[in-house]
Image 1: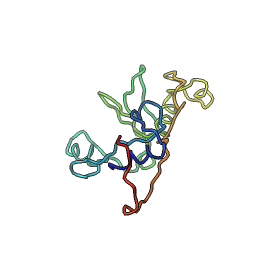
Image 2: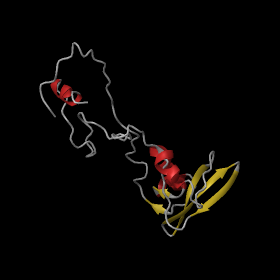
Image 3: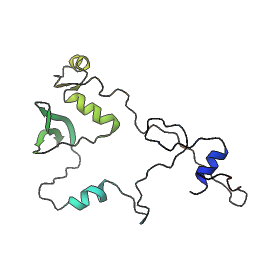
Image 4: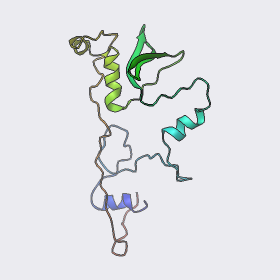
Length: 162
């Protein structure tokens, strides 16, 4: 990686030192889910499930689909889901974490009554929390990547450091 950023600079691509600032233009080294010390990839199973798998209050249902977040007095208190063709609900005492991605998270919010009241009304969904920003400006991993293969014997060492 020591030559990548200077190589981009050599061809006129500016360095983006703040890629999370809202301006995605320029080259940067993205944060990865690889532990640099061990080379092990972090993912849902080894980061969250395995350390908590023995907890008595943890139940994992594969094949279940969340259909809405249960909201009472502006507070998420659980979820409704489909499993084996039947509707079920799970309530919590502390918090609901909505982590369904850039597409499904706003969809679940809207199905739960959180969103633009005019849109929700159009589909017969009771508006529980008015928020016209739900789904607006949504981006799912917006990026452009460039990969290149170089013959190191013919490659020129970049002239500037980053």
